[in-house]
Image (cartoon, rainbow, N blue to C red; front, side, top):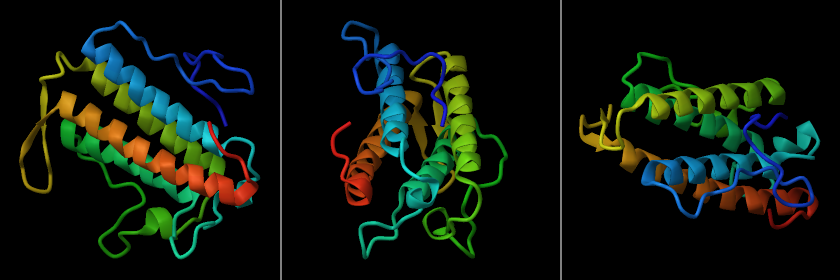
Length: 180
């Protein structure tokens, strides 16, 4: 798995998360926190045999690291491209007939899933960088309500924080690794 080239080595043990600035404007801080959480998720997946990434290690939950990866790729597309930028794109790992395919249908190559997630994250970064302000708005496809880029950034940080907690439990069950 590859880590974006703008990530720097900060701590021993292969931790490559970006540094979060302690003195920065709001936008730079939100971008750094979201990228830190993205890197944290990838770090939690590193060093595990591919077949174990699909292991549903915390029964009765259907979650796996592979499923979380697919879910997060879909969430990146849904919020940044489809709702904020209003691009007409197909859903990732979702259909009305199979709404839980991100977690349940773990077909395909893990490297391909990482490539899709990396591409979705890169596109999200481009959209954030192109926005004139954190006050720029998108519209929810579900109820046509308006939301700001600021709200979206905070929502995505919360999404990753929640799923990084899930990834902690999955990783510990898979190979005993804790922390990160």
